[in-house]
Amino acid sequence: MKTTPERLGEALERVRRQWRHQPSEPLTLPPAARVVAFTIAISRESGAGGAAVAREVGSRLNWPVYDRELLERISEESGLQKELLESLEEHETNRAADWLESLFGSQTISKAQFAHRLVQTLSGLSARGRCVVVGRGAALILPGSTTFRVRLVAPRKTRIARMQEKLGMAEEPVGRRLDEIDSLRAEFIRSQLRKDVTDVHHYDLVLNTEKFSIAQSADLILAALKQLEDRTNG
Image 1 (tube, rainbow, N blue to C red):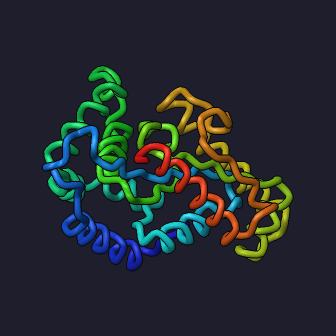
Image 2 (tube, helix red, strand yellow):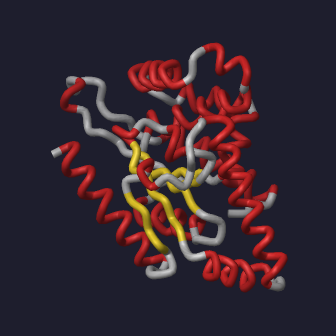
Image 3 (cartoon, rainbow, N blue to C red):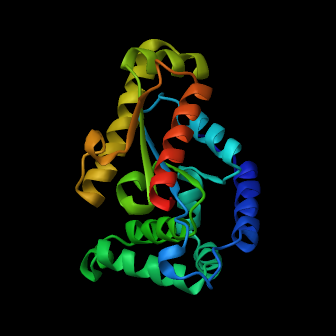
């Protein structure tokens, strides 16, 4: 999901408006009665259609979609992070802080400041819920109790063909680029989280997007999310 500087600025402004105006669950409800607001976290192989599927899901739910560039921009800019955290209700802020502390001890945080800021961003988004997050280890970072974790895959040949069509390049350089992207993503997860991004046990749903269109993939994700919400909040 490539974002130009102009589009990124527009997206960030939409993010600010969403933080300011998104309603939270009423604080008058006892904790046991609060509805769990899920976050959808999408992990994907390069060329598996993660960006397009995320946009389709977000559009149908009317949820904001946070891609890699948005997450990094929010994580890097203290003002944006402050706006995110200030948009949370007190109980949401406490939940995010408690979960962050349980995930990363202070020693780990001091050695990986960017990872810490990224996790702060993700925990703030998760505390609000009702959003779609693409990449950056969100599916492996966010708490499983409030996150629907999806992995999108496809055969390498299919992913290369899709990227060729998109980029207008020959198969060999596209294949090298695809492998490089997947390797960098896997290394980020390995170095910061000590996890294997390809391990299917980390996910609630794994979809082979060679078999399903963007719309069909969104259908399956939304149907599974509905089942999860009904079971959790029913």
